[in-house]
Every structure is written in structure tokens, then in C-alpha cells.
Length: 241
Ligand SMILES: C[S@@+](CC[C@H](N)C(=O)[O-])C[C@H]1O[C@@H](n2cnc3c(N)ncnc32)[C@H](O)[C@@H]1O
Image (cartoon, rainbow, N blue to C red):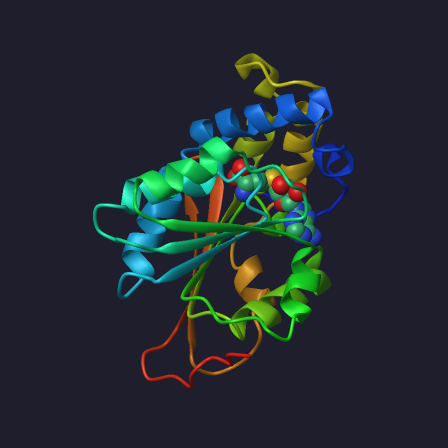
């Protein structure tokens, strides 16, 4: 078992303008990386397992181009109808085609272009049933992650996150993403992401120490580390604004 401490360093994709050709290409690479890691399958299975009922609203933090959430929506649309999705990212990169994809399956969609911490400061924020994150939580060092989790816990009943696993095999694979055609940005960010990834109970340890929540954290497939925080049934209700 790999025991080296987490290290969080800036990812190049976060520093490039959205329309920079290297960023555009790296977003495409990210879709391939998600496919190779089986992230949509893992996330959809987590949601099916831990959502007690069909959610009315799902918020995707760090949603990127929204394609990951659309793939999840397509997997779940036959059992969950008419869900409203909010895609939050600080970059404006969701295409009309992706938005149309949600509407085609009868799901609502809106985009929010904002930093996640600024978003949660809003006074008019309504609670959502489920929050998901894919390859997002690893951007934050422990104090920020704990701050984010404290904000999330006030706004939802379920948080489901799929992140890079900090392990030898994942690190080796991150050095090989050139083999699936990834550019320099993606090659850099893949390695940085694994060093910032999670293992064991590291995400649970950052969840606020409060009653009324059950925490689940586990390695999934070859490269992924999952976290679910779920409000216990009959626990105190969340704080709607
Ligand atoms: C590795 S990408 C993952 C995108 C998407 N979840 C996917 O799987 O394709 C991480 C995303 O988080 C966004 N991001 C990073 N820090 C953020 C912050 N503080 N607030 C909002 N978005 C952020 C980036 O712009 C980027 O789109």
C-alpha cells in the first residue's frame, strides 16, 4: 500500500483560457481518461446504490464541459425522470450540443460559471438533493477540502465523488496517458492528479464531525477512489437559504 502523503499542485488545464487549443484538446483527452477509468459506470453505480429515491436536483461541482454529467444522465434517465441538473465550473465551456443532450432525455439543465467557494457564499442558494464531483475534489488541499465539505453538508443530502486513487498502479498509468493520444497538458495534469489523489479514509477524515451522516469510502476498479456522504434517514433537515 502506497503511503506517500498527498501533494496538491496547480494543474495546467486550470490556468489556460478555455479557448486555448491545448485546453480544448486536453478537455477531449479528459473524456478519454474518464472512459479508461470507467468513471461514468462507477459514478452511476454509486448514485443508484446510495440515493434512496430519485433526486429532483443534481449539482455537479467542477463539471467541466458537462459531458461527464450527460453520460451519467443517459445511464440513469430510464429510472430517474425529469431531474434538474446544475453544471458548475469556473470556466464557461458547456456547448449547446451538450445542453441539448439533457433536454433530449427530458432532464432540465442550467450552467453556473463561478468559483465553487463563491457559489456557496450566495444567500439565495437553494438546497439540492444530490451533489456529484468527478476528478474535482483532488484540486483541494486538506483545509480547503474540509471547508468545501462543510459547505456541501449544509446544501444536500448526498455527496458522491469519484477521484484519482493515490496508488502505484494509478501513478504508472498516469505516466502512460500519451498512449491514448493525450497532449502535454493532459500528461502533466494526469500525474499531478494522482499525487493529489486519495486513498483509505482520507476524504472521510475531511468531512465535518457532525451527527446525522453516514460516510462510505472505497477504491473502485483500477484507478478510482470513491467517497459518498449520505444524510441518515430522519436526520435533521438541511439548511435551505
Ligand atoms: C479535471 S476537470 C474535471 C471536469 C469534469 N468533472 C469531467 O470529469 O470531465 C476539473 C474541473 O474543475 C474546475 N475547477 C477547478 N477548481 C475550481 C473551483 N475552485 N471552482 C469551480 N470549478 C473549478 C476546472 O475548471 C475543471 O473544469
